Structure formats: structure tokens, C-alpha cells
Length: 452
Image (cartoon, rainbow, N blue to C red; front, side):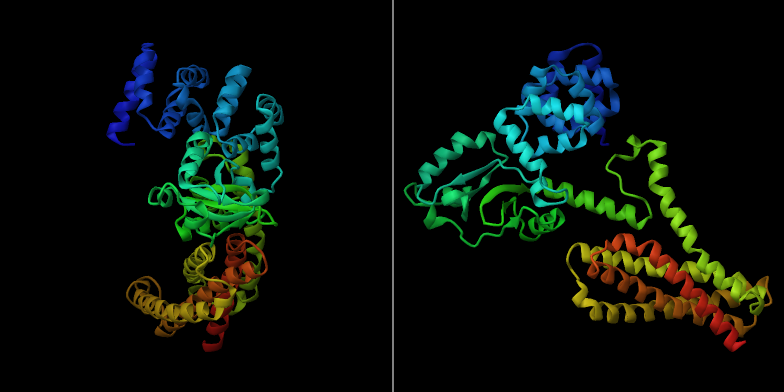
């Protein structure tokens, strides 16, 4: 936190504790809703947050409410009167209301819907009907629509009349019969046109859209790719049903990135912040993956047991180093390829290009590491072990081959997983670890026995 923000938070605490509520409200008016929510959650207990929220200026209340985590939102809703709840819900955009509802228990959801306007309630239920992870689940039906026969002056009149309740007014959508999307026009286009120009003469007809059931991560990537502020969502018949705004896309990208990081680390994804998770929930997220890895490590134990009588103690001593190096090499490649798949830089059709690139990289990396490994053994390990040059050459050669093998496995597995409609992040962690460890041991033992 910056020094300026710390001073501001201290000022808020002083005003709140000394009951200088007028000064508190004036200070809050100049703050971003996210900063206000962060201050309340970090510095106030549940009862104080309820009092603090009721002191917020009316124009800030719903925006701050959205920024709270689900637990705080639930606490506030339970403390609200029906009138207070209705005021907050009515001032929220519908997609934000849906986000809140999805995190609440059934009794709280009923109360929210009960205090919503009939029209809003209908739209909320429609949005809730869309499957999770689809464009429909994150879109908002609050957008500005224009008729192609309108003049620019009439378009501005409509924006002034309806724009206050819309999430985005910079991009307006031109619709025909039955809300068929036929074009798009920006406020910039309107400002640079004559008042009497018709919308159909200045609109762009080549509109990039997404369908309601399209994966929300793909929607977010489209927004990023085309640098849009909002993206129109249409149904199967091409009728405009909503828009996805850039703030929702940022949330999706952050959620997906966090989920992938958890999966690659062998942790079940969770939507709650770390400090809000219970000890039991963290155990439940981590233990299954560790159990899976424990079971799969049986293969490496079996391989070692099979070669136990044929390898001497010196060679055994280097097993952890070789397995660790190969695992790290494979991990580097798999993370890089998984990220490239996520941002659509590569697909299964590029598998040969990826393999060739990683093969050349692995040879360069492997040769470099093998040389360092040989020098380390000859200069350091020989000080306390009687290691011959033959042993050093074998270990260095295995190091080179293991790195090449691990990097090839690390690039092929995620692409194959994606082709099979599996999550590459899930496959990359336990499966790659098992394969790389097993192959490293087999290579090491086979080469050692063949040469010695």
C-alpha cells in the first residue's frame, strides 16, 4: 500500500472513531469504490462495516457493495432492511446483481429476488439460466440500441434518455426487426457526423459478435484481441441479447489465470481469497493431488527396485539430481506451452513446429547443463567420493538426454490434452511429473548398466 493511501486510511479511521460522519462522507466521495471496500474489510469488524456502509453517500453505496467479498456482502444483506436492500439492488447493473446472487445461499437469493423489480427479476432469472463459463453468464442486457432510420440528433436524444441506466454508452448497437443486430456505431462516430445523418449511413456493418453459449474465456480473449470496450452477445438467430464489457473480461482472465496456476501447482481451484479460506477447505484442495502424486510415485520406486542389484551406491546418489533437473526442464516447457494455448498463440495443428522448436532449445539447454554437470562432478564431487571419469560422463550424458526427453514431453502433453478436450493445466502436473520421473530413471539405469 502506498504512503498516501495509508494516510488516507488513517484519516478515515479517525473520522469514523470520532463520529465526524460529515467529514467521513466528504473524504469518501473522492475515493474509488474498490479502495473504500478494501479499507472497510481490512480495518473494521462486521458490526462496524454495517455502520460504515450506512454512512456511505447514496451514489457510492452500490458500487462499494459490489467490491466487497461474498462473505461481507452476505453480512450486509442480512443486516439490511427490505428498503435498504431494494435501494442497493436497484442501483446495481444486472450482471453485477447476478454475480452477487451466484455467491449467496438460497435464503439470501430469495430475499434479493423478492426486493427486485418484476422486470429486473425476469432478466436476472434469464441470466442465471445460462451455464457457468459461458458468455451468457457474464453479459449484461443493459446496452444502448439504436434504429438504423434514426438521425444522429435522435440518437443523442435516446442516449441522454436511457444512458444513465446503461453499463456502457460509448458503443451503441444498431438493431432491426426483433432486435436483429445489423451494425454498430460509437459515440465518436456520432460526434463527428452531421446531426441529420442517418445511423444506417455511418454505422459499421462488419460486427464481431459472440454467442450466448460461447466459452467466457474465449470472449475475454476476443475483447483483448480487438481492443473493444464491449462485445455484443447474440443468440443462435443473431438477435442481440446483451453485451460483455471489458471489466467483466478482466475478471474472467484473472479467474482463469488463477485457476490454471492452482491446477499446475496441484491445488484444486477455489474462488475465495486465501485469508478467507478455512483450514479444512485448504486441506481438501491440496490433499487429493498429493495423494495422486504419492500413488504415481510408486512407478519410480518400482523402477529403482528393479535395478537395485545392478547399480552401485555412487550412481544412486545422483538419482535425485537427475530427476529434479528433468522435472524442472519439463515444467518450464509445459508452463510456456500451456500459456501459449490459453492465449491462442498455438494449437494442436502447430504441434510439429512446437516439437522442433523445443527439440532445438532442449539440445542447447541440455548440452549446457551437461557440461556444467560434468565440471561439477570432476571438481566438487570427487573431493568426497571416488568417482571415475566414466561415471561423470554417464551422469552428464543422462542429464542431457533427460532434459531433451522432459522438454518434449512438456510440450506434447498439453497440446494432446487440449486436442482431447482435457484441461492442459490439470494434465501437465501429475501426469507429466510421473512420465518424466519414470523415463529419467529408465534412461539413467539402462545407460549406466550398458556402459559399465
